[in-house]
Image (tube, rainbow, N blue to C red; front, side, top):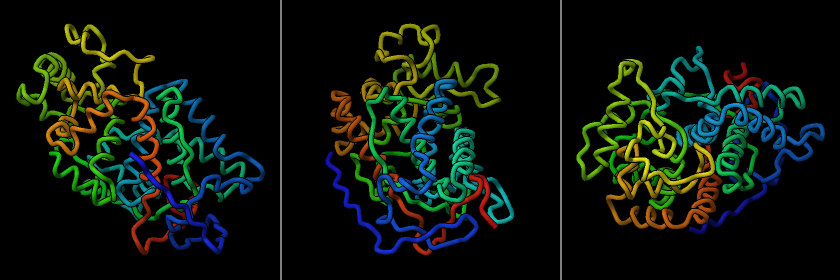
Amino acid sequence: MKVFVVVCMLAVAFRLVAAVVVPSAAPGGLTVGYYNGKCNNVNVESIVYNTVKDFLDADRSKGAALVRLLFHDCFVRGCDGSILLDNSTANPSPEKMSGANIGIAGLDVIDAIKAKLETACPGVVSCADIVVFAGRDASRYMSNGGVSFDVPAGRLDGVVSSAADATNTLPDSKTGVATLISNFAKKGFTPEELVILSGAHSIGKAHCSNFDDRLTAPDSEINADYRDNVLNKTCKSSSAAANPTLANNIRDIDAATLGDLASYVVPAVGGDYLDNSYYKNNKNNLVLFHSDWALVGTNSTLQHVNEYAENGTLWNIDFAQALVKLSKLAMPAGSVGQIRKTCRAINY
């Protein structure tokens, strides 16, 4: 896949003051190295990277959370940090309260980065840019450097966050391929890019409520041993009332639980590793979500599942390009933006 990116420079520069609401930044205003020289000679992206690394060194599971945070923020109202907002008078039911965002995590990492940057240069770095930088750096960390890219910045933080928007916009893990293709097309993504971005499911975990339809899926759609001895046993265990979680990738499930299925596991450099194993698992009917399995149901997506199952290096490159494209999704026309003082609340 080739993605051609044209970056336009704005003729007029706006000074962004934290307490002032200004027009939403246009996608053409995003530039690589945007914060160079804007933060008292502090390297903004280095602060983000080092903070992400410290958190992931202590708890690798936060890597998948940060990649998910990037997608779930940008796909709803553009990359505006709206997923970070807590409920308030202005936003009584924000995005993070949507069922589509169950288990959303990594917010503590964003908070820590924001606190450091506010100390270094108050009112300069948006939470929206922090989410994008952190997602990029988590992708690099979780792939051992395989997914590595520069990403433009200059976003503003949104002031609107709606659980209903998230519910109505984010892809449903139980939906079919035609709906997925249509959903992604509305955001400007091709069927190939749908397949590429779905590869992020090689890491992380999911609640049973997101894949309980797979507990009774036919053998033609899911490996029967995986369904009966892994999914059903996990979700119908004594703790099932608490909506337990399971690793997205069969590779990251312990051998005792897998039993004979261990022979299907694709070796990786450690567990919870961002790579093309997702596509290999999909070809063996060993993926967690119906929306994942659905990608083998039509030639427009199956051909790319096969392509990336065979070429992990190509997927690394294309995933990086798809994340850059995702990061350029803008707020709805007419939106206003600001640089929040804290990422969980808008400025008043």
